[in-house]
Image (cartoon, rainbow, N blue to C red; front, side, top):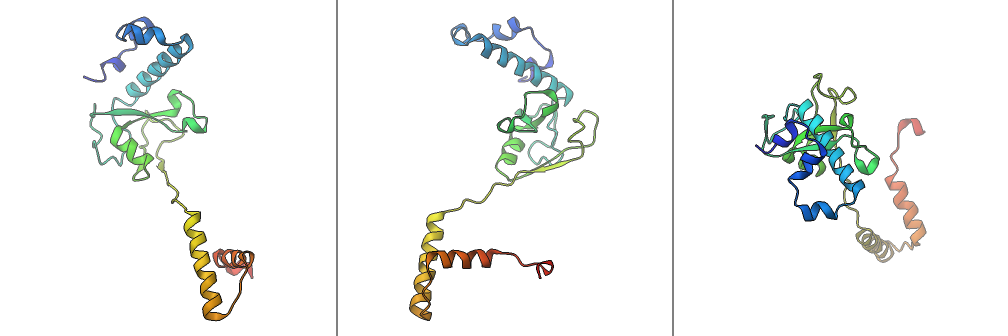
Length: 177
């Protein structure tokens, strides 16, 4: 089984004993420590979550124990200063994890004791902003400017056109009156 290594915490020596000695010897000592500490955290998280995807909305593994590919998801992303800590990790199947990061699915966590208290019963949705092409906007603005000039005889500078676009973008509420 692929998760045997996470069922029981190994000593640092035992953990690295299965590594290729050439690869192991190339690592600096601080990197060896980081790798081993992450292994210990994954052990704690996988054991706490009973080796099961914790996304209650999972369409991929149906929350089967020992799903094909389990991963550790950082609740607060590492790029946003999320730490490698048990409290910041949750077990997801790889498919659910990847779908979440592509913005295709949401993560729904149960209200059970094994789930960290700060995410119990919560839903997370990752929204990927739409790609924005300034080249396309500029070309459209140029077309609009030419159309106004030729069809209506209206001459707008780029600054005036920019103000007009901002005005059209502004959402009017009754409270703004």
